[in-house]
Every structure is written in C-alpha cells, then in structure tokens.
Image 1 (cartoon, helix red, strand yellow):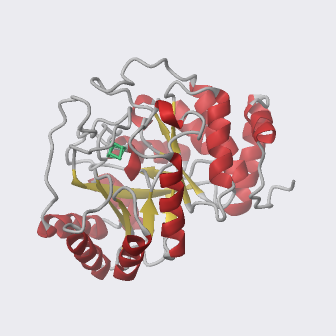
Image 2 (image 1 turned 45 degrees about the vertical axis):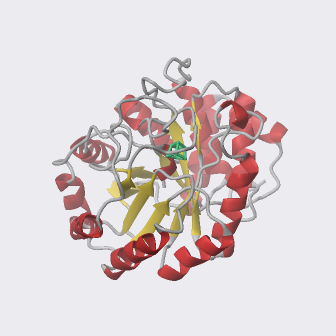
Length: 349
Ligand code: SF4
C-alpha cells in the first residue's frame, strides 16, 4: 500500500500488525501519511455546547449522562433557543467556523424535532457550519436534519462489535451502523469514533478501526477518546490503558483513514503536554478547546493556546472562517468560562 491509498478493505490481521509495529516505525509511517494530506502544523479547533444534559435512557457504561447511574451530574432541560443562538454567535465572533450541539437522548422525539430543526436554521443563519449529536436517527429524521442545513452528525461506534455488549445493552451495534447509514444517505458528513481504555483488548481496538475504515466512506471526523473514569459509572475503576497504546490507535487511525480529521477528544485533560504532542505527531489534527465540553473537564483554552505556541501549531483555517488572527484570539478568549462541566463522548465531533 502507498501512503496515499484510501482503502475500505482492511482486515483484522493487518491492523493487528500495524498496532504492534515498533513505536518509532509506526509514528514515522503515520506522520508520512499525515503530511500527504494535511499541513502537519495545523490543528482544527471546535466548540461544543450541550443543549440537553443528563437523564439519558441509554446505559453506556462510561457515560455520566446515563440515567442508569448516579454520578451527581446536574440534569438540564433542552436549552432555550436564545441561549443557543447567543453561544453560537459568541463562538462565531471569536472566530469559530463550526458549532457543535449535543443532546443526551436515545433519539430525538417527535416533540423536540421542530425545535432542533429551528436551532439548526438559526445557527446556520449566523454563517456557521453546524454539527449535532442527538442519538439514533431514522431515515426521515436524518433527512429533516439535512434539509434544515445540518452539516455534520456525530454518532460513535465506541468499540468493536465483539466488545460492544460489555459497554451498552440498550441499543445494538447494528442500530449504530444503521444511524450512520441514514446520516450518509441524507447527505450529511459523518463524525464517528470510539473510546479507548474501557477494559477492551488490543483486538477490540483493531476491530473498531476496521469497522470505521471499512465504512463505505470514511468518516470526515474520527474522534479518538480516552476513557474518563467518572465516579458512579460502572467504568470508574477500570484499569488504565498504557498511554503509548492510545498513541498507537491515533497513528493507525491516521494510516487507515488518511483524509479524515482524527480528533484527540475526551480524556485530554488527563494527558500531559508531551503525550498530546505525541498524539499530534501520530496524526491527530483536531481538538475541542475551551469552555463547553459537555460532560468531562477539558484542559483550559489558555493551556491549549500555550501548547500550540510551544509546538508551532496554528488553528486550521476553514472555509468561511475568519482570519487566523481572529482564530488565535478565539483561543485566547475561550479561557474565561466554566471548565468543570462533564462532557459526553457522543459529542466528540
Ligand atoms: S453516551 Fe450518549 S447515548 Fe450513551 S448514555 Fe451518554 S448521552 Fe446517552
């Protein structure tokens, strides 16, 4: 395979082999692929808002928003439109080009759908790209969201099909694949990834990567999360993943899905700067910054800005985006608000 090939026929043995390459060889290969498709010194930054927090009927064992576990998370109703629009406008004025909104639902209800559609139109009218994560979608719902102007939909596979039943029992792996299919058919871009460190074995990590890379089209965005162990969830005491194994997953995702943005997502607050730099070297080129990071604490935006400065990394310029100066200012300003809300993995976009 050459580094520029985009393949959809990956096998488990191949991916196992990639994951167990000597670390330096793996990083070199991933960085080589990365440079063929991206500027290695640019990282995309996004902001994220929880439009409805907690009391989710699903039982995802890692998630503080699940109504099945008592994590002390404060529940919130669907946010008022004015508040969402104000947050989106503020993000835009600070230079953001995409606004991500997440709701802790099994799937959007008939009652909430018109409101969500209006929300998309309102945010879109500010000149922002829109992204949402709302749970499972049927074909009609996906079409409605797409028609309202939704650009991206986030729906994670979380782990391998083999390990999946250890993590979630209230929806099946196939349910997730069906939602991804509906999103694609409706013409939206896909954000889809998983969570590492949930007690899975290396084959489960390989299995997830095979699933993602063998989708008919690679997700435009691939969030790779490190489990955040939240007290009160069944995963609170799971054994730590070797950080190098996490970096390996980033590198292999970069090699297998060379044109996707690989997002260093939840769990970043537990990584030191050196670890984050290794992830960038392995091909991660997207992060969330700042304030609203749905359910787990996120490194402060000023720390991100400082890390970017030390590594010579710039926020990636997007179409319709404001100047680089404005983006840098955005990073600088995003420090002010709350940082300790808990975030959820679905909104990893
Ligand atoms: S990950 Fe999403 S679907 Fe699962 S419990 Fe949390 S909010 Fe609900």
